[in-house]
Each structure stands twice: as structure tokens, then as C-alpha cells.
Image 1 (cartoon, one colour):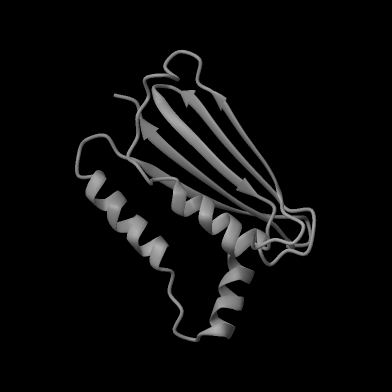
Image 2 (cartoon, one colour):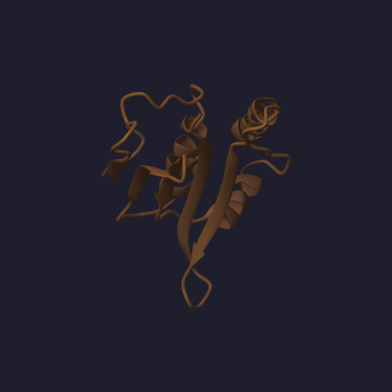
Length: 134
């Protein structure tokens, strides 16, 4: 509803062996998907795309959230223009949740990849969550 022209999205899974039994903490990926839409794609004028992939690799569920938005750096700049004391609540909240969840031996890992072209222009952001399958 926030987008006049909408955006394209694709959700895929490559988890053949355990796809019906894999569980992971609720609301774990939602903040990353929301950030991709709200901070990456919303500020892009056209050709907005979001790709989410679930795959099983070496006894881990790997979730990739890939957008072609304006990138984290430009989004942060825009948020600071709006409010010079801006700090992302969802990012802080998710970091705290991961800290609590990671008190066990099996760690959930989150990696951010700021995609850029040869001239350094943003091509969007890729977030990769790696969750052990127990």
C-alpha cells in the first residue's frame, strides 16, 4: 500500500530433506524483510525487487534476503536528514534477540552485504542468516 507501483518479490526454498520440519524462532526474519522494503525499496523510484531464499547447507538453514534498493548507507543518510538522532529500533531489538538466542552452543549468524557496482553505486543489500538445524 505504500508503493504506488508496488514491487516484485520472489520467495524460494531449496530445503528438500527437512522443509516440513525445520523450525526457527518466530519473527526472526521479519525485521530484515521489513527493513529491505521500508528503507531500501521505498526510496527507489522504480524496478523494485526483493528476493528471499531458504536453503539447507551443511546442517544449517540459510536465509537470504536480497533487495535492489538504495542501500544501507543512503538509507541511513536519509533517516538522519529526517531526524538527526535516528537509531533503528528494529535493528537494535533484533540484535538483542540474537544475543539471547546465541547463549546456546548453536549460534545464529547474520551477515550484511552492501552490494555495489564497479563505480561504487549501491545495488541494494543482501542479508544472510545462518541458523543451525538441530
